[in-house]
Image (cartoon, rainbow, N blue to C red):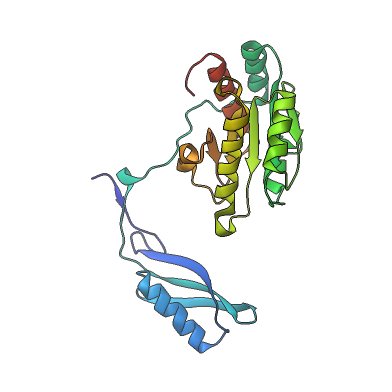
Length: 249
């Protein structure tokens, strides 16, 4: 067994956790009792409601604090580790010039009914995010940002038209697993429309994706919450050049 850890709240190893949820009940004492009952069924014992507030008629939002007895074996943790070097802008540009001999083409969009462009804009637009410039800042990248609510067929058509090396898709809306359905549709559309040898990298991002799901969704990479333009740019250079050399990325 590897290192075993417990949650930390007030003192090391005390097992204290904080969780939040909404119940479809009016805000009253009975609602707080229901929240405590739910927390108990989740293994939080003892539990206390530290915050409760109505979010609309007939719904109450809760924050619950309490102790759990669960342990985490760190050797059982499975994540996608970064398997490419994190490069600066000058290094990215130099790698594209020397490795491709042309500019690297990227097409990005929010597909389906998703109108949340904050994520895709943070990665693509020159202003970027958190002090990092977006992909438009990189001289050796050609960026096409198609915006929001783009039909998959139009995205495929544009990617083929510009000869995209990579397609970046952001998905925030996840009700009824819409983000998963949209990405599977995207993958299937590219498999049908573009031969494998010319197919662009398919890169997906969004806060509700599990990075381990890439192969199952038919895409090359998933970036979760907190991904930065520099990280995405570094991956694109690594993966596109590896594909050009015929090396698995």
